[in-house]
Each structure stands twice: as structure tokens, then as C-alpha cells.
Length: 526
Image (cartoon, rainbow, N blue to C red; front, side):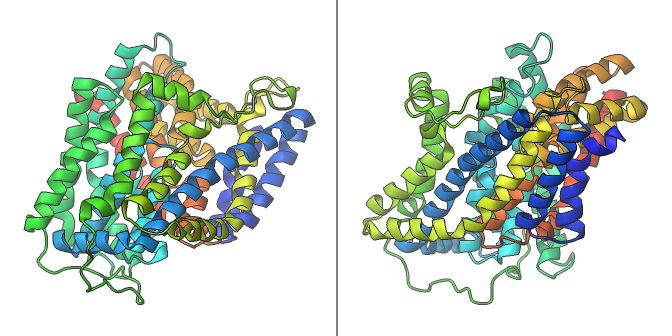
């Protein structure tokens, strides 16, 4: 019975959003009420702890909305300045094939953003960019979420590894290096197929079955192998911090060169994901391609500088700090918001730089801001309900009944009953954590001690089990509720969250299965 109660934070959203097809605003509001009532009654959480958790979730919502605003205002500004038209023309000169654009924009540019910022930022940036390039909204949101997966285990300059595994005994730089090599070794199987999986989903969602996907198998498998092999090389040489960034940059160069020459690509351009009302401007823009892309270059540069330059990192983390510590006096219930360090601030600054660099009126920015704010109204309700539920779930270890937290209870119940096949279960525990918390880092921080203990108890290689946890947490990013809510909002599909999860669930499961198979093969044959 307690296991069913603990699972309520997973069952309720799945039931309301996916099965009953409610909007996130309604479905997550009901789910939040259910989980809160069960936490107060069956789990023995005190009212003050629950209320502080709700405030914590509300505060975290503000941090996500700020990133969402930044992503929207940047894209809207670039549409107003004409930069998006120039970017589109640039793609046409490389390849007009929308399948190629998915790999370059969603998978590789998204990986670059993930490596620099993490925390769901890539889908909020690449989703609207795909929309601006002519993709239908549902396609743009779905593809952006699935693409933001392989790179997630090393997102935000290696945070899921360095922070996620920080509570493992003897965790140090050498240990993180070992895990990085193990993860990238395992991902040579799982991650290499993600570009092709993107093609399958793209083709299916666009109503083309497998016809649009199969001709892309040679090129996408080649790109997938280049990315995962590059990631393995970077992890082996430099460790965990810059895997996503450098692997993405290397593969971007290879993808651009091969696409422009048509190497391994079908002769016919595929455009079946395009909106009916979309046309590529025939009028040649006077703006250079570098000028058009410059705001995104600024985004990546500022994100990296604020994360790797020590004095700048310290300044941005402390100068304007809206962090709420020990909310309502409950120790440990804290929500961080280092304003200048936030990707939202970087994205907004890039939007301001955009109209200056591209020599347009400031109205390009002000109009973009108004449009962004109007887009976010419904999303704020959905996110508050989602994050309130998540924080009650995570903080449920603070209770009067002397119970473990709900996520720990779930993990230990699974470990006790499924220990013999744990290597296949481990990635899905990672997915479970990411689905609820919306963070590969939090998933790994929460579940890695359990993964460690299970591996030790049944004699499995600890590094492989922890690596599979990270792979699963990355896959869970595709279906995480608040990522889906944000991705839906930026493409104008608020209320369609359940439909998007139904489309991303399959790839998330496939990734988890491939991760389990990789782990099994390494345990038994390498």
C-alpha cells in the first residue's frame, strides 16, 4: 500500500495527462492535490513542511519561467530583426532537407546548449527555433525533447556527474573521470541510435510512416557514431566537464560538411514536417550569416564564461541572489536562483545584443518581450502545480512516521524485488527520477546511493551500474513533465502536454532498454 502511495506522483500525472489527455494545467493541479493529501495523511508530513515544499516549488517555477522568457524573447527578437529568415536561408545553402535540420539544430546545437547550461534550456531554445524554420509545432516540441537526451548526462559543464554522484563514497575527480569514460563507452550503443530514432519519430509524427526515416539511416548512424565516439574521446582525455560541448562542436563540423556535399544522404529533400502557411523568403537578406547567428554565439560564450572563469562565476552567483533558504524555517528546503548565473538572464542579454548588433530598433526587443509574456500565462499555472507536487514528493523524507522519502521508498522496493535483473532495471530508475524531478542531476543525486548499494550487494560492477543510472536519467529528460510543459509553451501548444508525452515515451523506453543491454554486455563480455 505504501508503495502505491509513493508511486502516486508518477501514476497520477500519467493517468491524467497521457491516458485521460487532460491539459497540464488541469491534470497536474489534480495530481498535486492528490500527492499533497497523501503526503499529509498516509506519509505523515507536517503541514508546515508541505507548505514550505509548495513555496519551494513556486519559487523554482519562477526560475524556469525566467529561462522560458529568455528563450522566447530571443527568438521573437530574431524574428523581428529578420535574423531567422537569414538563418533559414543559410540552412537552405547547406541542405533544405528538414531531417538534416533536425540533427543540426535539435540534436547538435541542442547538445551544445545542454553542455553549457543544462536544466531543460535546450528544448526551450531549439523548439522555437525549429518552429521558426517552418516545422509544425507538435513536431518541433517532440523532436526538441527527444534530441535533448544523449548530452544530458554531461549537461551544465558536467553537473550531473560531479553533483549527481557527489554522495557516493570516495567520490573525487579521479572517480568522476572513470564514470565519464564508462558512461561514454556504454553510450556507444545507446546514444549512436538517437539521431535515427529522431528520424523515425519525425517521419511518424509528420504522417510519413517510416518512409522518411529509412533513407536517413546511413547518415544518422554515422553522425550518431561520430558524436558518441567524440564523447568517449573527450571523456578519456579531459574528463566529464566538457564532453557535451566538445563532442557537439566536433560533430557539428562533420554534419555540416557531409550535409553540404550530400554524403550518405538521399538525393530528394524531405519537407513533410513543414507548416502549410510557411514559406522561405526568396528575397536575399543583406545580413551576414555570422550576424544572424551572433546572438546564439553570445549565448554559448556567456554560458561557458560564467561557468568556467572562476571570478566571473563567483560574481554571477553572488551579485544578485534571489535564493530562498530554509523556507518557513524548515531546514534543507531551499530554492536557488542566482539571477545573473541563470540561462534566462544570458538569453535575455543576447536578445538585447541582437537588435544592437543587427542594427534594428529597440522595438524589436520590446515587442518580443510583450509577446513572450502573453505566451507564458497558462504555462505558469501548469509549472506551479507540477513543481509543488515534485517538491512535496522529494521532501517527503521529512515526516512524523519515520519513513524514507517517497523516491527512496520506491527505489528500495524495486531493489528488493528485482535485484537479480538489476542492470536492466537501473536505467529506468534513472528515468523515473528525471520524469518526476525534471533533472538528471537530482535523479542521480537521489538514486545513486541506492544504485551503489544494490550493485555492491549483488556483486555488479559499481561504475557500470552508476553509468547506467546516468544514461537513464538522461533518457528521462524526454518525458519529464515540467520540460514538456515548457517545450509546449514555447511552440504555442499549452494544453497538449499529454499528446507530446505519448510521442516521447517510446523513445525514452527504447533508450532505457539500450542502456540496459549495453550494461549487460559490458558486465559479461568486456
